Image (cartoon, rainbow, N blue to C red; front, top):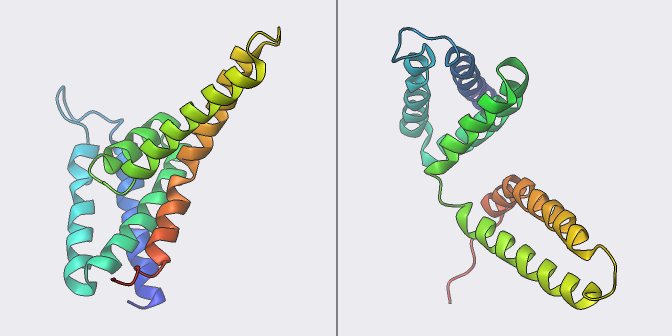
Length: 161
């Protein structure tokens, strides 16, 4: 896939997702929004890319297009719609579960052990410090999922033993 083809494909994905995120706020009737009619085009774009350029190129376009669309959707739709769109997309993706779970559990255990040992019975407001520290660790953990995915995608596969 050339850079031009990649750019056009990402733009198509971006337009479909952003358009759908805007249209989902416009009811067609009591049980359907216009976004429900436009979003299935994203599957068509993905299927065409998969057939024409292969699964790896299709995944790359989907990730770049979807990420760009979520950023744009924050401004042209709403942060809430963008978040819902991203969460719905990630629901079927499995790559993020292991790093998220390990990061969350590690942050909870690390923070609980450190603050309880370092500050318990010291008179310091350690519980609130602990909660603030944990909130930052969790936010960083979540924000690092996309770079983690990019790194894992670009690193060579380990050699078989």
